[in-house]
Image 1 (cartoon, rainbow, N blue to C red):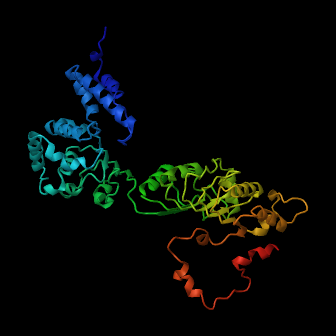
Image 2 (cartoon, rainbow, N blue to C red; image 1 turned 135 degrees about the vertical axis):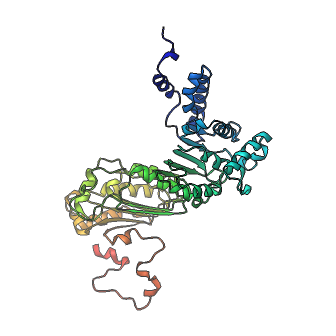
Image 3 (cartoon, one colour; image 1 turned 30 degrees about the horizontal axis):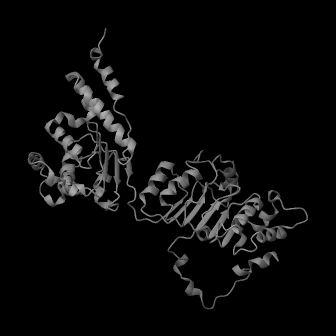
Length: 470
């Protein structure tokens, strides 16, 4: 009978590869990523004890990934791993992924003092060999990280707690060897619960590695407003961008429109890369801070694009009740459900691209308002290319015996007894529909026109809009 150790090395190596779970996530705070690596590591260690042949086959998998998930919250596994690859240089080529996320970043400040004297002497000699002891004030943990990176030439994935490590020890390494960390493909930088803020600029040398394809750095940008206009963005990139922001207050997405050829909607993209459900899911990390949301998947003023939008097999906008401070919402009609659910803090609702009947939706919104669901709502604006065209469309289902004017008044009457101003208006300029926060058109303030202001011929005052239909 053939024994397993008699199998060809290639077959045995393939068998062992299934023990070490591939593609593990790098989040150290989840149970799954805590249990599976330790169990897989234990199995590989047991296999290594069977024979020297099995040990040689298991070592590439044992040293491929370093995930410091010690039960005691100390970097003990990091220490043992680093000692092993220093003493056995032949293991260094196997290291592809390093993830260092101490449960408490404060534990790194004193851990160097708590190391056994023989370990301190061992690492001191290794640091001296790499000329990394010029500034001991950098912190012993940061020096050991730099030492580890000098011993891992094939490193592809690096995941760090940004607040726990200093990049200063790496500066002389980049100056000494421009190809340092040249195989790095993914860089993950995160904060911790105690100290979520850190200066992302200190990691700039890592950003320029020639093979770097992915940079994940959640909660690091001070940006509070994102405006995406006519961009070709996939869902993963959108989600990563949103996660990078510390506190997102305003988000506007005006995508998928093609200005060069208004009649050819799909000339650049046959499919949309995400829908409104994906977008709301990506925004959930900022649900407690988001105050303004604007969504248009196609240019609002090109009829051919609106027809394509209606044919788009996407889901409808999910409930927005989980956004407690969202006070302004601008959204296309085609993205809304027949009875949309808005946050209770909503003050201004603008619905664009209205080309079908708005009666049922307006009735549902009015019913919710009268039941107290939207106590802060003050204004509802329905946007269309042309008021007359909208009110005369067959699909608007104007009842027999009523004129478009009477139909509009009937819609307004649904909100009697509330403070809501309901309007149907033609499109303004897009910069007026989605104003840029902090800027005034042409650099003038409203005070510059406070005196001597007069209405030009044909202009209509905002407060006199009701007279157009009376």
